[in-house]
Amino acid sequence: YAYHNVNTNGFEILNATTKECIEPYNSVEFGIKVDPFARCRISNNSKDNFEDMSELFGIKGNYVLPAHITKFFFPNPEAFKNKYNLTQSQIEQLGKWEFYVKCKTASGKVNPEPYQIKTCIKPGPDITPPRVTLVQPINGSYITYGLDEKEVTLYVNEPSECKWSVKDESFDSMQNSLSCETDLLTFTHYGWKCVTTFNGLKNNTRFFVKCQDTSENKNT
Image (cartoon, rainbow, N blue to C red; front, top):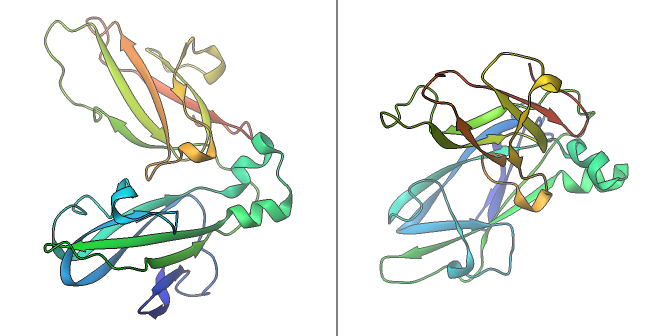
């Protein structure tokens, strides 16, 4: 991917070769330089002021720095077709993303107009199974001795129904469900959040999670 149409007001992120929309289900890393040094935040609402923006521009967004880098994950807009009964025109519109950046210097000055970053997601049928993008606590981490249950949070790259088991069995056979966000407005940088509690830790050290998306594609 590459920056295109770079100017003082913003830039676009497009396929480096074709200069077309980027492929879905990809994490795209991008950044900005700041002069003077500043802390930066990002929003999808052009009307937000700096204090209203809840998302930092990257993990160091709250530090006064000369540059900031962040990474966004972009889902396939087709993944919402069944859930919201979308038309093709609505799917194409959903694939257009616009972000607005504001930065605040150490002396408290904020750029009056947001810096705009635009991109778009290449439309196409949702034929891929969901993928877990992040697990907290991380895979292989240690737990307190004697603990028999632990809350686990994971993120999937598209709206999904997820289940877990202590056995590597089929999705339909799994009896334990995760509570998963599926609404478009609950999308995060990592995807959609799912939460559950693994129990029986005293007798089990391996847990299996499988998910099915709204197009009924299952990960195995």
